[in-house]
Image 1 (spheres, helix red, strand yellow):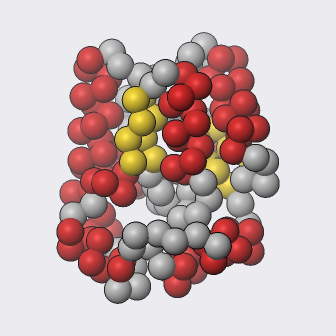
Image 2: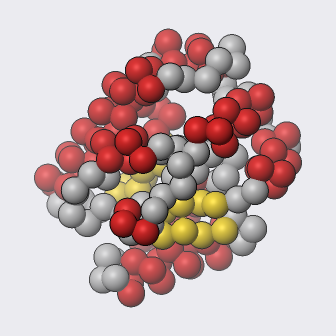
Length: 163
């Protein structure tokens, strides 16, 4: 989880490759209307996000029901969003890719995204509610390389017998 440009997709792909787990990109769960709003530079509302989060939760539930481990990216900026997708699901861990506004703005300026303009970064940081200790997050600084981030996440999962 984390704001746009923190490295969710890159880290998820590397983590999935390392562990042999399926990877899903939460951006692919957005409705065309949500994509159009973001492309126009309009932040999504909680109402816009409700069906998107429900779809992500369904993907997680299906993976759990099949006993298949997986990684799914999601901004999950607010606690109530994380409650929908993580909730009381056993075995689901939250990885928070934490970085400064300045570093992430720099990264966004250097990349091209299909519909997420860098102008929405400020609204994402305004909405961000960092995960609390009771959510048992794995918090990793994005100042590390993607490979080092994956090393840390795997080490946390192995220490908690999650892998």
